[in-house]
Length: 122
Image (cartoon, rainbow, N blue to C red; front, side, top):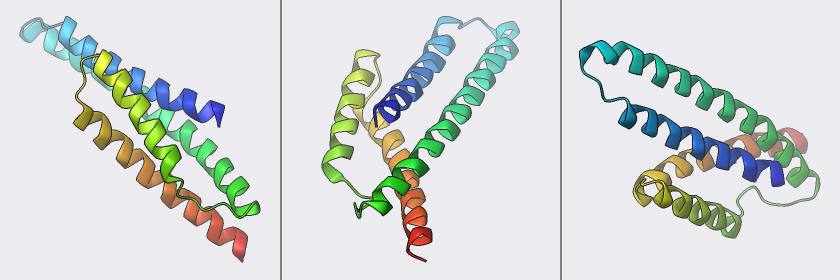
């Protein structure tokens, strides 16, 4: 679980970094391509972090399935969401944006955990 928190924080930092890179390098047309390359690089890092997170989610899903713990842990998700909303606000990100991002991540995580649970019940 500790690594899961670290990955969530890392994802948030990459999102924040992408916004900062874009904001700090607001040069006209000649910088557009350069900035797009920076965004592409950050997007690649985001995808890689999400893939690493998914591996851990599968491990958590296996643990929960073996120990008869339901995939949805509402209190845990609210705790994670609130922590990341606060971290996002410190970086100038809106609570709505952070909520939308983490709701999407959580939805996919639940899907993965449900799939793992179904496979372990067979």
